[in-house]
Picture 1 (tube, rainbow, N blue to C red):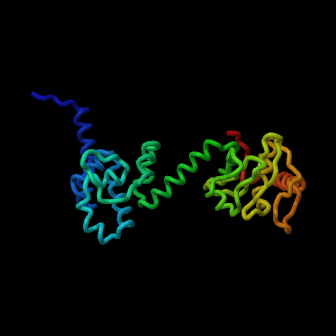
Picture 2: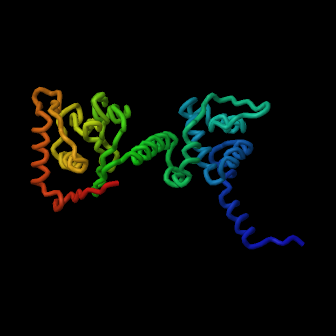
Amino acid sequence: MIRVSISQLVEQAKLLSEDKRGNIVRLLGFSREAANVFHVINVKWSFSLARWMKEATISWAGKELIDATVVNFAPADAKRFYGIQLTGLERSRIGLTDRNVLPFFEDYPSEFRNIKNLSYDEVGDYVIQYERKEKIKDNTILKFDDGFFWYDTKSNECESWIAKKMQHCGTDASGHLQILFDDKLEPHVTMTWDKEVNTIIQFRGKQNMIPNEKYWPYIVEFVKEFEIKVSDYWSTVSPRERDPGPRLFHRMWKAARDQNLQENKRNIRLIIS
């Protein structure tokens, strides 16, 4: 007589409830063999993996063609798409490979619940944004209660996507770039800090202009916290906006003082990370 424990029954029921192969065949049109590949990769992720592969191949070859041929996708096609090495005589008929989704899930498996219902294109954007946030989080040096924070690039240039958003070159050989972000990961100010002499070389807002006045308190808090000097370098290249660094910082300091940072509505009390 075969005895089965309650825990084994529960586990079997859980596996059955998570098995998405039937839906992959019935709703997405894949063959049972291809569905098995998604199932082996990960039971929980399988349906989303299949759906994303279908969406990607539709973008690549067209909906009409893929709808008609998806049932003929071989296991090797599913493996090739997700970068799984083919063995023996396996051959894939598609020339498309995704190199982001599986590595991302392997690094951040809990994120699956946040993206399982997104489209394939949206998943790509999500992965890029998430990895940007993780990198920036590791190098955040000052945080504020309203979500703003300073990010140290530890380099004399910032990432290309930051430069693009700031609409300037994003490079300065005279020091490490510091970036002021809001809680939505939108950059607003770049600042060059020469750490060897503990001096701020320049401030930059978007399009190389003087930073918007509403961001001045964050600059002041940064300078005060690290007891940094401000150089005599012109703070902006625009002739109509020229203002030497120390004079501009004095304006910033006065504006920040007048706002009374400890009591104003934005409540940007400094937190040292």
